[in-house]
Length: 252
Image 1 (tube, rainbow, N blue to C red):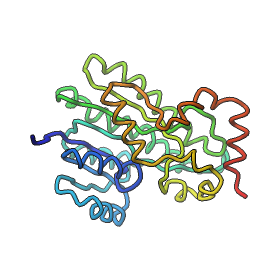
Image 2 (image 1 turned 90 degrees about the vertical axis):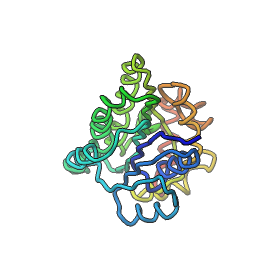
Image 3 (image 1 turned 120 degrees about the vertical axis):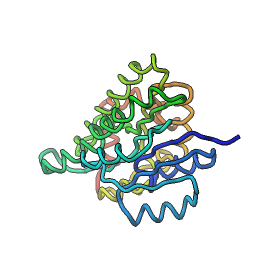
């Protein structure tokens, strides 16, 4: 039986976004894949090698490009807001423009994208929304305060939207991954984390996808991928956890 469902994935050229694209391609979904970098987008297109995928370029830290995307993309059945970067630095060390762009990419732009499609998603069957936030949304992150606050804000938005859209039967699931084996840390100058963080604390992108998709189909409003993170999540704000985290993330 032909699958007529369509998914929109942002940040689709690598990491969790690419893993989600592969997962849905195996199920026959039509895919609209959004990424920022032309060369990475082309490489991802070759890797995916999927005839029902359309690739789009957009810098989602810019409101005008989100508006442009909304004007040319069809309304999806499944919207996966995954695009993101991290920014490492002490409070006051990040420029005003960098803070504005980062917060829009991780939070306000996600809201604009969702609410731009939402009226038509309410009219479609089998509509779902997935927001890839971070474990940083529920734990203090010294020297990543802008990133953590944006992830916390979009987590709160997603939780609120989940209850609001129950009457429309549109599940909204916020995923809160911990350390995932992607290149986001290398891009942010945090490559030392690969050496410092124990291997058992890292999870694969595909695991995030499987657990997030399962939670979404069940109508859960949030999921913390990875058993270890679900176990420790109630203690993440404790002084002991913060001391351990500080030691593990320190550059040596």
